[in-house]
Image 1: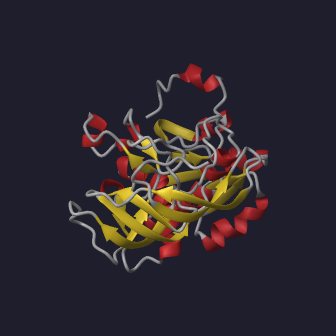
Image 2 (image 1 turned 135 degrees about the vertical axis):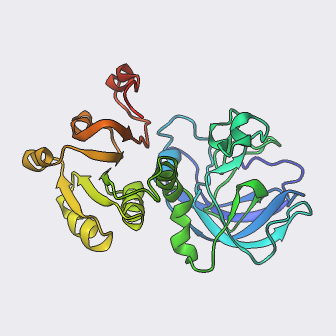
Image 3 (image 1 turned 180 degrees about the vertical axis):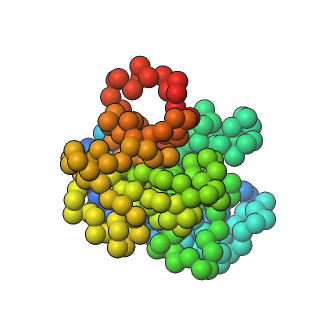
Length: 290
């Protein structure tokens, strides 16, 4: 039975998984009314993040069923609260992973809400009123204005959706490590999946030399012809692995120690999706990793 609170009066149609079998089926639930600092959005598109697959199958042991996944959301604003100034009805908008944070800690004040101790997610979280959060596999959503972004007219709404998770995940370290306007660098992208393919596109857009490292030879054509990668290495090919030893920034899906020998002194190793990192990584203590 869906979690409800007194102000959760809006009936919404969506898709939910009801157990760890992970099967998604139609589901009707309640959303809260639009508050003073809320924005209501009619959902047009929602990307499928691999996190959604982990959550619906309870791979991480934290799923609250029934679960309505989805945190790569784009749509049209249909209602705004009286304290909302930067959005209006009819605006194109997007919502990512975050639904709530304390707004008072140092992290929140420095726009690093993802580190807030009271962070709650767009779905499978517990909101301030005690209700379970439901995501973008649904017709509409009510969100705090803090976590809504404008989607420009120049960007198609369907293409914008994956940028709300995969996009921001790879864009942020590029920005933080001065790789957006820096002179041409060598960037290695390990794994051409949801994050990897976006990292390649960003890397090329910012003028860098991008090398894709993959276990799948069949992905070379897509990497080169569609995404613009400069080089492609099959990680199971020892000869190819020996050729490339120095890369500046490394993006990857599953950590693999042999890749470390490719990186020069004072390298930048950017880690994503660390859920299944092997124990030896803990021994490194990241002493020499920036």
